[in-house]
Length: 283
Image (cartoon, rainbow, N blue to C red; front, side):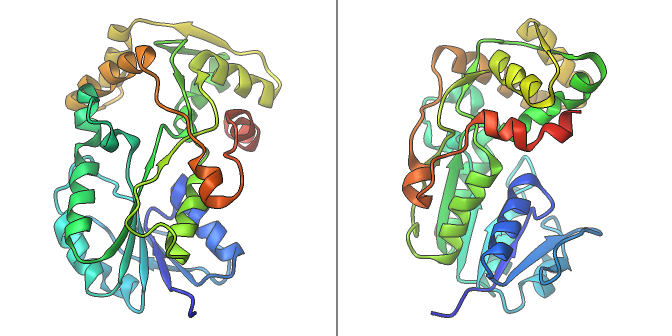
């Protein structure tokens, strides 16, 4: 069987970068879509293009068989044109979606997952082969604490006891590689989770252990957290979706499963492992 030629979007991000690295390590031809300068190993071809400008994607897609799609916007505007362009070149799309799409009860989070729902619908209707990966929260989202940790040794955030099965980007990538290079996940929407629920307070403690410094979790109210997000420039509709959705998860935690191990043959990495892998980002 001829190896697919794969284009990875989001290639300079955490998940896309891990997909590029794992494909390269496996000797699979891989191409990275970039908007500017980026460093990749020799043998990984970086091609300029922008998902916000579908007409710019032709050179990156030339000769491509399969696409790993990370949608970088908070709405599905323009997605139909992008998928049309992909369909003129490739036969398969593996889309990085969200666990929230499969949770019909999660009304407070609707604004967060709405564009994922629409992207999945467009891809499924396109005639392309597809897989939609539905991960829970990314462990890498805790990198948002890095500046506070470096400067104050404390994190001010709500819901210290909020527990989530955060997933390592390397595990998402390992599942994506299976979907990109084999037929095992065609038409599948696997829910991908970390191996255990870990509270935010515990996440911070594990980061502290990894960097060799005691860290403090200073719990603030949901209202104060919303104000922080607005001051940081988050769109109002996103703030109004995220904060209630987090509060809802306190009472109704996300599920934990073994899909990563079932698909890849290797147990999902723990948050402790993620913290050790990223210790340098917090020092």
